[in-house]
Picture: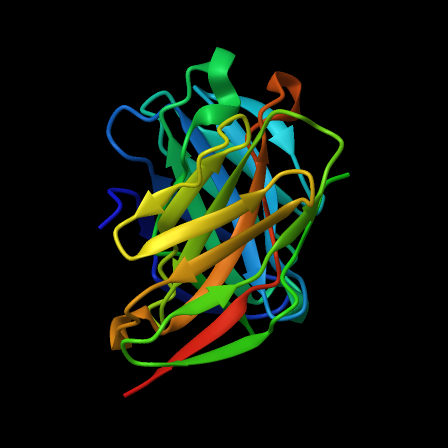
Length: 117
Length: 117
């Protein structure tokens, strides 16, 4: 158990709908990262939040957005869902003193399996 | 942009034997970190081992060790005394140590390792 929790574990929804994925980082971790794992794209970085602020964006669609709240949990919002959004979405956290950003190890949550029908 | 390549989609090893998984990467940076993550059928991403680019000594964690060849940009994982529980997908990942590059992980395509009893 990495200490990172994600809810829900599974989500089945229809095209055009909107869903919210939730992540609670390890106690004390300030950074939250979101990744998408799909068969055709592999594991891809989506977005990074540090202590409530967006730090970096990757291949994240405009239909997707995220935020990190004062208690450090994060939510990934996916809207106007398409069949191709079906994937496993991971959240990872790390302690991250910002000045030494690259040195941290990221610990992954169990993921949320999203199926869009 | 940095890239990570795993050229072996599948590998197989006999229980108790040794297997080496290959990974190459491309970067113009001198400060970076390399990781191997394991993803068993449960889909949980588990850190196996990590290597700092500035360290010449190869990292070792119990039965897992790496062969880090910085000039060749190669980072292979050796698993000794393979066990049935080692069967999983293994991902090689790169992380920049440059502050303004953020902390995102760049993953290879993965190598599916099967262990035969």
